[in-house]
Image 1 (cartoon, rainbow, N blue to C red):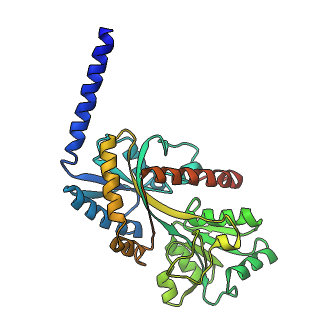
Image 2: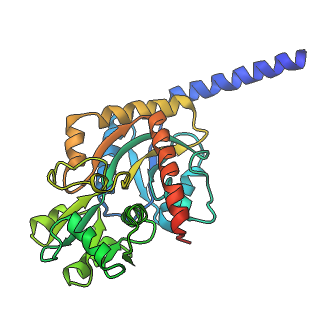
Image 3: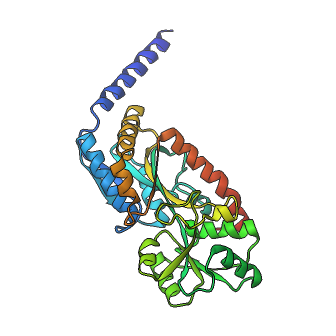
Length: 321
């Protein structure tokens, strides 16, 4: 009995110490790990958010780029970091879900090794063709695919990317036979599209190309039409259930004290739920559809992504390693 009471006292003291320490958070700069190289639209958004979060917390939030291994390198660094609230991750679909489903081995568990704090937003993919392409609509393009199986090709930024998965889901849903041409990024794919070597490209960037009169958007992969292209249908309208978006949020190591993650969630949602931030994230430079969700809904969102993409990846035998 004495031993039991002693253990209770020690546990209470430990908990008290953690709470007291959490109340002083943060006392110095916070590192936010970005798992991609500089220059992406997501990083533009992340820097704006980091600046405002730093102001709210009265400590700088410094972005550190740690690209590699399809964004899993940076995520792994955060998963194994001290759970003290001073190392956070910009978590993406490629590093959390469905990305890890395409690797035979992963150094971390996407749900167990992180506390997912808040979802920031999603990036729809656009199905684009050259302006002089004979297909003037997505329906016409699908008719071409069905009429000449295997002759219509499409490009994405690589196997496992959201654009690739959107096309794979479309193929499986409608029983299509299209030829995938993988690239290491959107820029070379678009160059080949404009050169007439591709029929279509799935990319997250389309506004500037449309303004320049170089491409036509046939469809978007989000669940709703996007404000910048209100007359363009979603793939879901043509083939129910075909949706695929890139997304990113903010996560921390799993054992980070609840008082700290709750504070971060509160501050992030306050930043994201403003007209100013909504406009900034929706700007064509960033190209995001804001979708601020707190921790509980963010985790549910990730779990849904896993449920949706597991059978697609299995059926397509998709592997990136």
